[in-house]
Image (cartoon, rainbow, N blue to C red):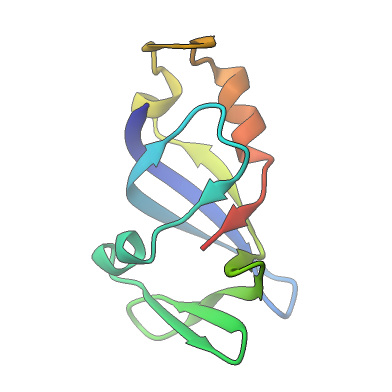
Length: 115
């Protein structure tokens, strides 16, 4: 595993893509889905509101930049990981299935993002 920063791209209701950097993210290679911690967002100064099966993510100024809908007890976000910090990308630790590579990160980046 590695810990670093990730740039997430959120697609708003208007179709505009907004990027935000989340710090202290734990990279878990070979995970089937990407999970985003509400407490991690809180530490980075964001606010998450839940109501009626939807969630709204706001920045420190109260501007909405992320949306999600509940599905199977998790909130599926309209977002994707755009890039990862160098410390996570160059992760060299060995895991059961071999070393983590940039190709592994590409597979995670293209996965779904859940809250």
